Amino acid sequence: AVVSTQSTGTQMNQLEVLKEFFKYREMTIQLVAQMTMWFIAGFLYFGFNYSWGKLGSDLYLSYMFAAIGEVMAYVGQAVPLTFIGRRKSMITFFLVAGSTFLVALIPANLGKGLITLEQASCLVGSMFVSSAFSSLFLYTSELAPDAQRGKMFSMCNLAARAGSFLGPQANLMFEWNRHGTLV
Image (cartoon, rainbow, N blue to C red; front, side):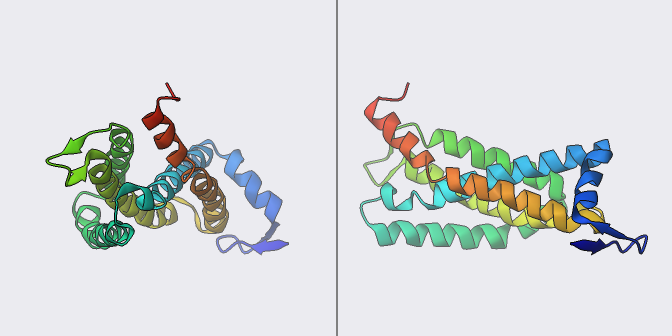
């Protein structure tokens, strides 16, 4: 397949466009960093969202809280993206989401059995990973040059799909942790 580049007006095949990512060191670093962020976002997003059925005694109530948290995340992400910038916002989103994923492994109750630490951390984590995942689309489109933007998005999407496949498998890690078979 032949790709027309907008900047030079020449035509390149898809392999030549792919080679340009590795021709320039800065573009290679950006591609690897973006693919890593997309993988982590896919892993955490689907890891949190596919575990709601296991978190509470009432499945519908659990998914209602998940939906409310996700709406709050999408509405609330505009403020930090606007005022502190995309890079600092995404660093914050990823750090909070990743740390709440680790906190979810701690078995503890908050109060008199109203909500567990796992439920609270999954709610907060799913809010922040939803914000991170949706703001990755903005951030990735700003980094790639016009001719390579489609390739960068497709390679990042490949990394996100790999993460989204492995994320729900993290539920097994929660089960192993509870039963003491994973040290």
